[in-house]
Image 1: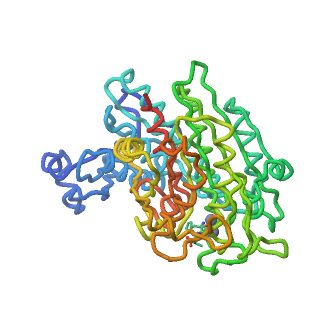
Image 2: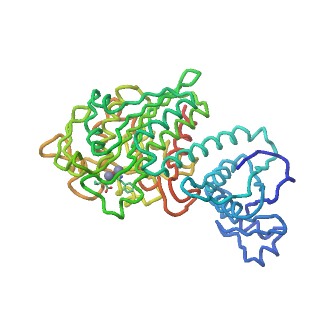
Image 3: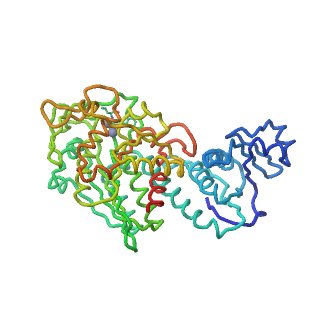
Length: 467
Ligand code: BES
Ligand code: ZN
Ligand code: ZN
């Protein structure tokens, strides 16, 4: 689909317009819309085919409402037989329209032998002043496409996307986007003493990989940002095996890694003046005679020992080594990790919201109030506390990989990671639990079945506005 910014109102098959209940009263096609039962309810649409007009109901002109209805409109347009459609845009709503069209119209067809063919080829975004909107247009397209890139990787099946193929894909991204690329295989990971990460991947037939991509701007970097992603290309639970119902969808346990790759892709294409480091721990958590076990004690890269009480709490074991490596390699102003870390995060915040944890009130505020509102990605804060921290005590090692009580599991997982954040970095680090927000089996907002690309729009927005 080709999306173009234009001031030519006359050359497309369908005109799409957004209508509030108030505006409906004065709509020129009110009679026809009335007959069809259209009352401009949010997320309802009415197609007047003879007129080449698609009416979209909205509660308000807010970006959330526009993005949501555009996602519905684009699906209807794609299922019809038109070649082109036009949306009216302005400075305020253009980003929401692009997100609705690109992300709401996203389809993943790699494994379909006969993917549906669509006739819709051209989307025209009609505005009065192209010059005024051009930059916002280009930025929104870059971020939306990076989000689709992330979704594609999340949606790829574990047989096709395992640690080695994820490393290969990262090398390709580095080449295409002029990024530095350093990949540590198992031999190097041993030298690096990443014993916790290696233990998780030991029963897999695929070698674990630590991927490090760097984007350096042409101008002097205003800030240095480290991103760390959980890249469990499959999480069977290991010997603490998941029940079969919960194992389905666990190809999505690499969504943190995919988000981090999508973000560095977006930032390098936006050519922002910040240095970005993306670190990915790519591992497959399997069972077998060589599997790591509940009761094992692992010596992490940092030197701290961890008692394994549940092999399904593997993400934190991978991340503690990658976080330690990343902190040693790069002195960053911000350290953000992304992980589908806990089912408990979904219990706490629901399926739609990313859990945000960390010590810095300032960065949390900037992310949750500004970037979240600007990007439309939902975030919720989960507070650390000293009582929950005690639940991670181990009798035989420095820390246990699971808490001794079941409540507050997203927070105890966050506090486990916190133990591996160096004192000088405490106020630079945030942990994003995207267990709920990264994947969906039913469409909501501009998300369709599968990976959502959670984190890409949120962090791109934050980094774009960094001072
Ligand atoms: N990858 C899962 C978390 C998850 C669950 C992500 C559902 C997305 C959807 C993680 O590795 C895990 O299994 N966590 C355990 C932790 C428990 C053993 C303390 C969980 O959430 O049950
Ligand atoms: Zn797990
Ligand atoms: Zn996992």
